[in-house]
Length: 290
Image 1 (cartoon, rainbow, N blue to C red):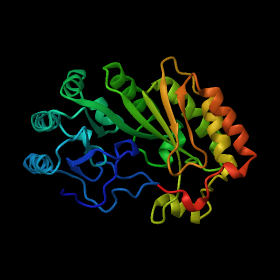
Image 2: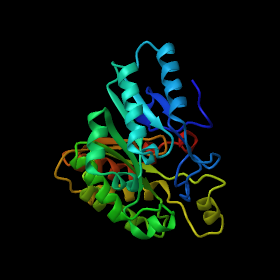
Image 3: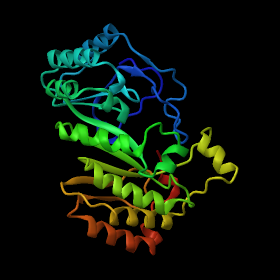
Image 4: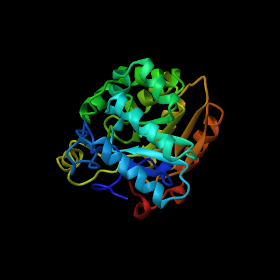
């Protein structure tokens, strides 16, 4: 298969066929991220994308899931995305789900009719990095989207029957704003009511603006016990009315959590309370990774 640069995809798409419709990320300014810094954003010609799909059909007998990359492929115009979905249906009738990375502004830019068309043509889930529910933190990390925009976008997609899978970052507010990060992230999840919510733990990567801030003493990472305390406060502030599948079992996390909200909230909080005073439950730093 043809891929340009490093490939990034959600953990749940580990066994999916990765199709690059875009190269890089249209925003590419987040202070903590290096994923697409080496790539200049562009949308690939449709003919190239079709060639990749045809090549994949020759190589693979059975493909159940396809992930449309790179960073925010949902930024593409609907005609372009619909053509890709049509080609997938033609070549891979066995495909059960097509997924994509998107930003809140991508969702808000599209009309309800456009989103419904994508849904009806096979788009099964939108992955979105929210990172934090706190407005100050969002501005500091140069997310380029507001709390209000992200709430509106998720509610719009979910309301039209398109599931969303959101990622949030423990520790992204540093020691100075861990409490604000926890509370405001809990409340934004409550207001959004996504289908999936994942809580990862920030790992500062050399070469990022966030690393520069840390070296200057402007940003301080949380200790493992503080990360767990933050996660506890987050869960205490999530009040959803419909089921939200919650995961905090990424390679970056110190303690693995998974459950459905609201029904498993108390059990997960209890696990975090126990782990805060029991370092034997913490993942060794040598095994944490992005």
